[in-house]
Length: 460
Image (cartoon, rainbow, N blue to C red; front, side, top):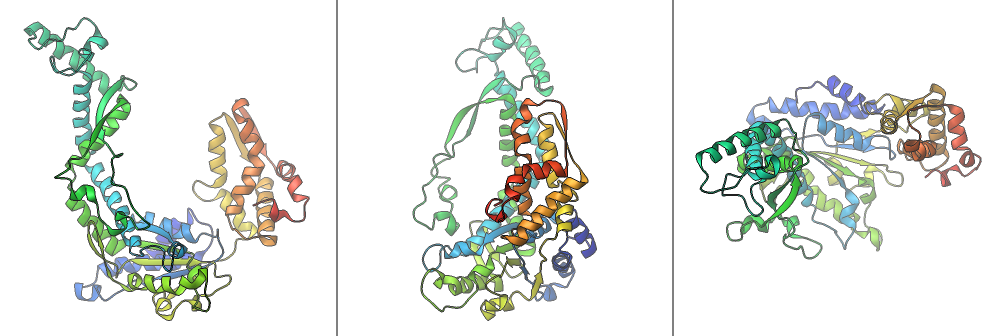
């Protein structure tokens, strides 16, 4: 959280090309959260986040900026399509479900952190349980004799075991423990008791019990114990399952819930996509009649309210809301005034140019070209793209976006799949070869499409 705005922008530059104004805007918003934490408690409560509206066509990086920002500081994050609340009736779904889903995400994040803290202890306990499953003490094996007999041969299972038998058992169990530690028995099958998730309570109607934050299993846990069932797993899989079970026993869920709620209230980020689709006032009847209704239902959460979840109440006053939309047929001023006032910062994202496409193909960490290179390397193909091929792909992407529907960087996915389709299909049968993709190859793969004047109808 103590990253400077310049450091935040530098981190975002590793994944997102261009859009510097948008990056600066979110970087300042994130830094202000850190500054707020350093204020006195009285003043801290008065400083509210400055919510942001990103305006720009699809595929230029709006969602990616928000998602990477949240990952950068490990903040609870959720992306919500604003149009989902208009799907059924006047208002489709309970808008407070946004906060409940954000809390669930935060709980998962905290549980992962807590599991990591106890992982070593949990792994040791899991290995002990695994050893008991593979080699139960004499007299405690169930059906089919002691597994040690199958592993070592000549070992008799006896509840009255003599001193020699007990020593024999202890010696062979010690050998087995060493084999487990060296992971020499990973493919051996063992029977493990796991929680049965198939007997969950059914959900009725469009608004399920989870929407209300009610967990019947938790409510009835003391009356109806959790159902378990036995599964036959490999030692490798059983080790993972048992380690998770042991870690969960060590985790204090009350502490997890408290930390998660605090993270949501102080660091939560909600990305409201397609907000332009609910912009507009009531002027007609029909499917668009609920637009203003959705805006008014979202307003209390954005202004600041208290939402009840199964982990406790959450105040939304200091959650950062980042809205986004293309605003082709509407504009931010079409939102109701109350909602406009809750998004004081507005930033426009630029459409992508040919140079941007070239950089997107090569510069970001885990760029598209590096992804395809790694995928084909699995089949023994060494893939290389020449500079003129990269320029040609960028030129085609820019041309199609200009003359057809502008879908931003997503156009590159479609073009690359078309260019590499034959190679991806034949790769498993062409071992240990090197393939260089140049501009001529790109044009040959797209020749049928590029001959047509209505290119956009064929490159979707």
